[in-house]
Length: 242
Image (cartoon, rainbow, N blue to C red; front, top):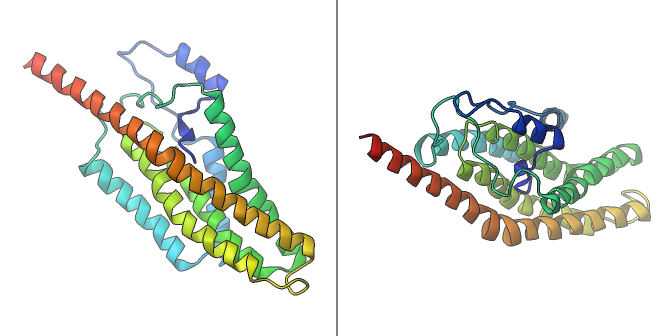
């Protein structure tokens, strides 16, 4: 969700060390348990009627556009069936892992808890305000899992979080405006009002930094550099064979 698909779990590192020689490359598992859970969240929120049709359309469009860009602008460099490109930030990056964990707590776990509490408190307005952000972030996590399966290039890995992060900033601004406009008593206790406003502000601050302080200036340039460096190597190899 923050370029965090570059992180491998220790078990995945062991698999990497014991993988077969280069002549028989292994492809990554298509989806992890985390990505399947994200897909479940997407399905539940989409079926609940709490997500606007524009956000549903955005998710469908992003998938089609991802396939289009992958086929035309940034195709995979390796042959079909080749192993996935190496991670941009290395296999095990503890700082990035901690950063992604903070994003998961702030962006998914706490908003989901807020939505569930809103169901008990009868705060329909708060639920409808927070649900689009959770829906889009869950869709982003799932689509990141698709791009890291080895079928997509490094620029396409960067495309998903940047595309979704940009969209979600507008959604979070709407969420914050809804929370600020609430009146105490009508939409739950004062504790819930403060929690909703604090959560919306925290998400706005975190994801604004994620887009303008990490994805655009750090992650995207490294992904493009890795892609075009590999592209140059492939072209040189082709010339040598010719």
